[in-house]
Every structure is written in structure tokens, then in C-alpha cells.
Image (tube, rainbow, N blue to C red; front, top):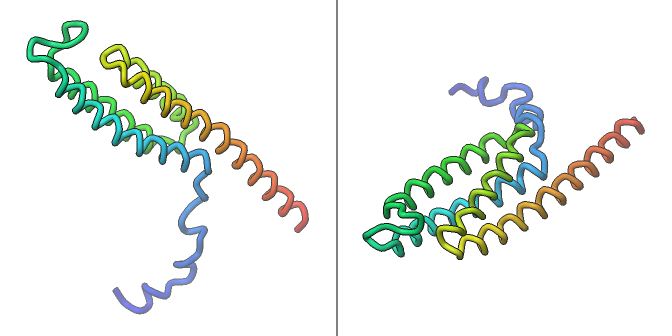
Length: 144
């Protein structure tokens, strides 16, 4: 790389990074990221506690690992898609699936309710902060 490349005009400009990410999207990705770890550990726990003959609903022992893996992949995809409005609905579906996993292991009802509450709070507060930031930016633009 030459010195001319390193000192290109506007290389350090914040606009080059793109539009700032919304607070709602940031909070959603944080919640889903932490939840991803908990779901991984929960899938291992359910797999380890399932007897050799099969678990609830006559599911084979490996079904917990497959379902946990699919849920983890869905959560990773949701994190990547948070730039679209419909991805937040997908986040609600993910939380519903985690809550439904309580029928396999009742501890998942607690985990699903806990993270569902956190998700709800982050969606409400994140939306409010984004609206306040947009109103403040509109006021600044008006004053110019």
C-alpha cells in the first residue's frame, strides 16, 4: 500500500462507514447474542438429560441437538437480518420457539419468559430512543 492510498481524502470520514445503526437493532443483536449462548447450553443440557430410550414425545436423544442447532442458526440469521424491519418479527418467532421448548424441558419456560421480557423491553426502549434521536436530528436540521 502506498502513502497516497493511506491519505485518500475522506478515508476517515464517518459517512464512509454508512448510516449509524439504530439503538433498537443494537439492543436486539445483543439480546439474541446472549440468548444464543444460553440456547446452546440448554440444548446440551436437554441432550444430556434425555434417557437412551428417547425423551418427551418419543423424540430420539439427538433431536435436542438438531433442534438446538437449527434454533441457533435461525438466531444467527436473525442477527444478520436486523437491518430489515421484518427481522424483528422473526425475533419474536425465535422467542416463541424458545418458549415452546418448555414442553420438552420445563426450564425452557423460564428461559423463554426471561429473554422474552428482555426482548420486549429492548424493543420498546430501542424504538423510543430511535424516535427521540430522529426528532432531535430533525430539530437540528430545522435550525440550520
